[in-house]
Image (cartoon, rainbow, N blue to C red):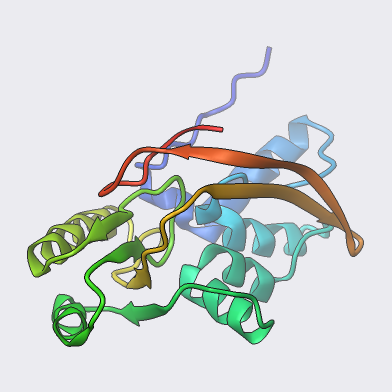
Length: 195
């Protein structure tokens, strides 16, 4: 039996394209591989670059960046005339504070620019809550600034059900794998509890 080294997210090298490509090349020597993809938003751009270099069918780098960056994704939705919540991007605590103080809305959703599984996502209604969320983002950014850049969105809070659509695209053909009603914890945190 072949023993494979398990890569952990706490290993900062995993977000380095050269390191990850080396690990994938090791696996390609052992296994017949049909596709390389990531189920984590964090690694979609990195995997796209590696899959392209290794001549696997994959999404292009720009699309990968859009899918893994909440701000670019919201801008793309807006450009395509999709309904989107109001959103604003910030990179400092002071910028967010000024915005909240000048806003007529009481509630905003703090979202790290990158990430999945609602890590760092929180409903905020005060400067203190914004400060707590930003401090958490700074800790995550110190762990790995590629995966967690020190940028965030403040997004309009819309109460309601959340649905998720999982799909694959192959040769411009979209294959819908499923649409799920997501079960989310009550605010202020939006932790995924199930589907």
